Image (tube, rainbow, N blue to C red; front, side, top):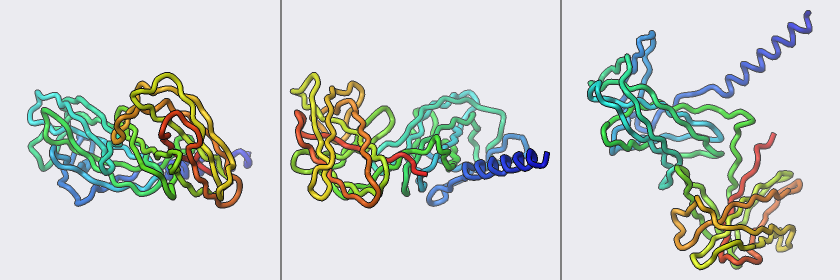
Amino acid sequence: MKRSLTCIITAFLMLMLSINALARNTITPFGRPETVGFDNYKGRVYTYYCLAKGQSMGFAVEGPARVDIKSRAGLKSENIRAEYQVQVWEGEYLTSAEKFRSRIIDADLNDTDLLPAASRDFGFDVPSGIHNYRLWLVSENIDTVFIRIYRSGLSDNNQPEVNMNLLGYKRQVHLYSKKNQTPYYLIDRNEGARIKVTGPVNLIVRCRANFTTAMDGRIGYTISVLEDGKEVKTLSATTSKSLTMAYQDYTGVVPSKPTEFIFKASKGVHVYDFILKESAAETVSLRFSMPKQD
C-alpha cells in the first residue's frame, strides 16, 4: 500500500512539473499599446491589447516555443459580422496568417465604445533563438481587434526541429507555401554551404533542385559533403518539379519536390561543406535541421 501511494505521489509530481513546463505565459507587446478590459460576466476581467488597422503590434519570443494568439474583433454595432485576417510577420516574411469570422457575444469591453465579438484563436511554433514578430490586421469591415498573446513550452512530441546557423552560403532564398515562408540556402558548383556541427547527431538535409522554364520531367543531382577538403559522403537524388511551391525572391526557376537525407555526424566538432558535384540544374536549395536532442 505504501509503495502504491509513493508511486501515485511521484506520478502526480511529474504531472505537475510537466504542466508547469508547458504553462502559458502572456506576452506584453513592444511599446505597451492601448488596452481594454474584457468582462465575460463570470467574475474576471481580462486585459487585451488594441491592434488597429494600419498599425502593427510587435513582440519578441525566445524559442523553441509555441505562440498562441487570441483575437476579438471590436464591433461598431451588434448587427455586424466581423471578417478579418491577423497576419504574423518576421522581418519582411509572412510567418503565419489566419482569416476569421465572428459575431457579437454577451460580454463587455471597458474603456471603449466597441462591442466584443467571439474570440478566434490561432498559433504557430517558434524555432530556436530569439525572434521578433509583428501583427497586422487586414479587414474590410472592422478597424480594431483586441489581442492577447501567449507563449508556452513544447512537449517532446511537439518539439520543432532546430534550424542550423550556417557559417557561409551562396545566397538565402525563401520558399512560399500557403501562409508560410521557409528559408533555404543555394549552392552551385562553385559556391556551397558551410555548416558547423557538434556530434554525435543526425543532421537532416532537405534538398530541392531548381528547374528553369526550359527544363521538364525528372532530373538528377549529386551533392558532395566535404570535411577538411575530403569527400566524406555524397547525396544523390532524382526529382521533378513541385506543383505547389514557389520562391518569393528567386525568379526564373521552379523548385523541385523535396528530398530528405539523414547525415550522421560522429562525436566531436565538424565543419562540413556541401558542394553541388553533378546536376542538370544550375543550383540546388538546401535546408538544415536537427531533431531535438535529449
